[in-house]
Length: 422
Image 1: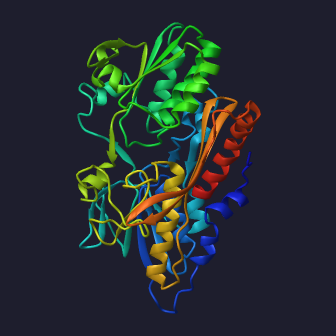
Image 2: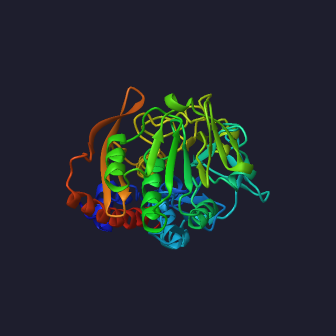
Image 3: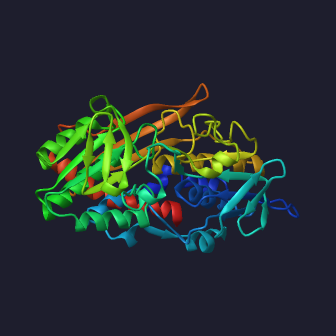
């Protein structure tokens, strides 16, 4: 099983782009201005890789948070296997090492015709190109009764931060023998294997601390990502602890009663000791307000340049886009961001444009010492991103191979976050 170093990760994922983009600026020529909204994985990667050509392009990153906590690996935190601080990454290196102007403010509005971004503090930023990485939002009224107040009782924990800490406190205080109910969302959503990884790692915590506890997954779907791998692991590691009910069995979750911590389906009501409700998703609010999303709630883009199909001169990357075969994962956001940076730099500097290489590489935990991996490459075909080569772990893999994958995942995380944040 591959062990990752930062150098090897950079070679695989496009660090050579840092050299390819570094085009000299003609004497006396003003720098082109690129504004990036959103400092998650996609936005930070675009900013960092564009700033590699700092002699030609001035990059401004707009992000209200002082640090970013990764959603990936946050399930390890919920299971007590990783400190929350290890998930947090600041923007200091992007500013110091890459010369990015980091503005800790929220974007209030986008004005494509004027090529300006209005900030919440009343100021405006002008741009030659704009990149929006808005992440996800939850669909309004996706579940009856699940509002902001209910989220403080039955957390989603789908954005790493206070919600993650709340869910962990609830799991820690739950009595042995209690029922943990996880509501899994309909497709498409951020990180397809994550709800089931969460159930697996919470089960590992229960085994250690609350062996009589039970986990019930109420799914909006009738099947899920890597289902054979998860169900095999649940039978091996947590026999009798995890039950998965598909939508065709329950009729789907129709409502939430936060006062009683109850999840209501078409045919039954399930009262939880702790409930984790992950609602249906769409592109982030800014994308909706700026006319970057279509009726599906997601953002159509050119699969080569990641320019919006609805607003010329505006590019989008990450979970918000309609990605074809590319899942909504951190690695995909990072890969898209590099292709987007390459395309923008080529247009603004007149440099050569090379074919983008798009990948997804992911590790998923089934238990603390049992993980599986997948790797997929993609290319644009007929206006859509199509998978061309793929690998995924098999159920019959040995326990040693899985242990190696769990160890490799740690190196992958360190190399990946260094590639994004420096």
